Every structure is written in structure tokens, then in C-alpha cells.
Length: 352
Image 1 (spheres, one colour):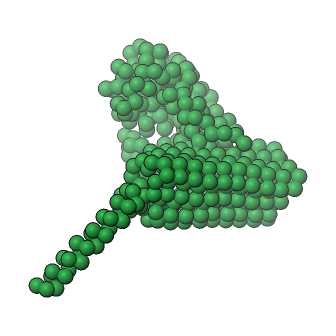
Image 2 (cartoon, one colour):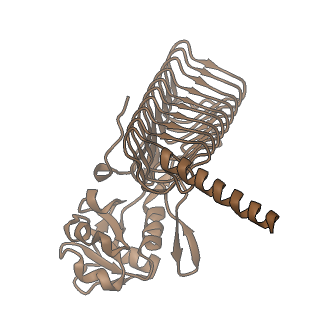
Image 3 (cartoon, helix red, strand yellow):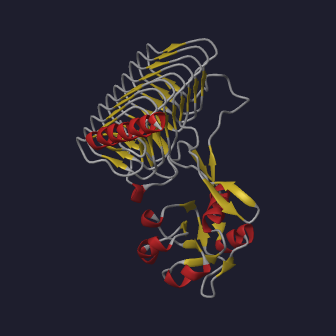
């Protein structure tokens, strides 16, 4: 099973993304309307988009927030989109592209340099280059893309769609009309009817003509023994991986957003929603309709009560509830206090 990559090593995976012809810095400036820095060479070539921390000299990155000034100063990227006030903080080795909306410009560069691999409409339903081990069961109407690999004993139910480059381990069960793309899946995984694995995460940036979609160039890693319920969605990462750890059990109609890391042996009840870049430790539990805000860390063994809204980090082993969520005893004391105050209020009005 391929492990998830740290963000610093994140690059578009060639199994899922076609690397287009390199672009010059001058071409990217013309494409995005960016102004090229005085010391920047327009003929310099870039081949990929990347993150500030993991970039190499033939990569282009962006920096849209002063909080990332340290990463900007240390980046090894060949080119960077920045706002005018941050241009001076860019390394001298880096071609500077000054623009109003660095993230939107980076998104345009990503569309120029990378193309997601899609099903060939002229190929057979099961692409000739797909590799199926002995004992794979393929139901009616199944589509398997180029370069996909599926292990022995796996069952693909009617209407399942397996994207190009996807790897599925042994003894898995893929339900009817499940759609899997941009994903590496371990052994003994069950994905039920209508689940969508590897669709683009929700990312948008403000551009000169309004909101633009930000390219989602990462993967989904689902480790051994995971169950994903009917109608659930696990989005691929923006550049790094969305990861679901071993033996985690996910109910129907759960959403896991891009760049989320879910630990081992976690449980998520129906309608749980996990926002982008959340980190969840091992053995965590989520009640139905629990929601977690982006960039939050849930410590190992934590429990989140049903219908709770988590807005900040939850320490390991604690039980939180309410919205905004807080430690369970505090939440219950506050709820009891509000109940008593309300009772006194209405009783007072009745006596009056």
C-alpha cells in the first residue's frame, strides 16, 4: 500500500495527471496578466505547480498571505505568484510574477501545466491496459480506465466506474454505481453504492472576473480494512493526499474534504462533515451530523457528540459536544443552566 506523502513532497502523480509541455515564465505572465519582476527572466521554464515548502527549481508556486513569509523566503521554486507587497520577500533565485490574485493566477498556471487523466471515450469499457488479477468479478456496465490495477478477489458491482491509474487491492467490494478516481486503495476495503472517491475538493479563489476553481491535483489514499458507506464522498487532496487510515468505518452520506487525514479505527456516523485539512487521530468517534471546521486537529481517542460543531482543536481522549463544541461536562452544565434560567423566566411571566 502506498503511504500518503507529506505536504513538502506533494507533486501531481503521473498516474493520474498528464504533465503538459513546460511553459516559460513570460507565457505564464501573459496568461495571468501578472507583471514580471525586474530581475526575472521571461525565458525561464517551469514544468509543474507545487507548494512553497516542497517546490523545486522547475516548479511555480504562489504566496497570498503574509503569514507564509518565512516559507516564501526559503522556497526553492523557479517562479512565484505574489501580491506586490510581498514581492520583496521572494528569493533572488525565483522569478517573481506580481499580480492582484496570486492563488487565482496559480490556478490558471495549474490548468496550463497539468491535465487530469480521463476515460478514453473511444476505448472499450475495460481498457486494454488495465490489469485485473485472477478472481476479479466484474458486474455489468463496469468501466475501468487505462492503467488501473485491481487485486484478486475484488468484486466490482454493476455500474461501478474505476478511473485511470486507480489501484484497488485484494478482496475488496465496490458497490453499484460507485465512482473511484485518483485513488490508491488497500486490501479488504468496502465501498458501498453511489460513493464518490477522488472527486475534486472544494477550492475557489477570487480572480479579476470573479471566482475561479482552484486545481485539485492530489490523491486519495484508503488503507486496508476501511468501509465507506453509500453516498459518501472522499475528496482528493489539492496537492497532497487525503488519507483514511486502516479499519476506519464510515457511515452513509458522510463527506470528507480535501487534504484530510483520518487515523486508524475511527468511526463516523451518517451526515458527518469533515472540512479541508483536518487531522484526526486514531480511534476517534463522531456522532451523526457532527461537523468539523477546516484546519482543526482532533486528538487520538476523542469523541464528538451528534450534531456538534467543532471550531477548534480537540485534545486527545476528550469528549466534546454542542455548537460551538466544548468539553462534554461544560456543555451539559451550560445546557442545564440555560434550561433553569428559561424555566424561571417563563414561570415569572406566568405569575405576573
